[in-house]
Length: 144
Image (cartoon, rainbow, N blue to C red; front, top):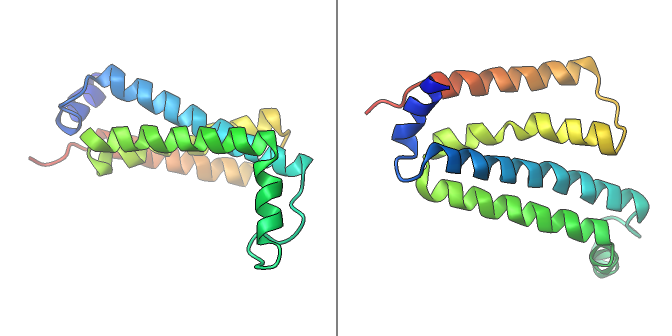
């Protein structure tokens, strides 16, 4: 943790590390829950037609905005985007964006619990590789 603190000090000099991690936790939780709630809403109320079909676009749009879980999920995704904008306002893109890839772990776990999705070992292997890449990026000090 001390090494991450040293690295992040140059990347997020304007804000304390606890603030960065608090924002990351809020952003990642809202991202994972947002995606899962949107999916759950779509399962409860499947769209009337193809999303991008011109003739069905208005009907699909109004159906989606009248589905509470889709609206709540969309609000959580908007919160995630707001948190991301705050993080990017003071942190380096090359530090902040790799941290957000933790969502690649949280989102499948949330889907596993709430949607009862089955996640094959190959997909978990890919998720582990992403996490390993994040670990490497966090250990690399940005040249001055």
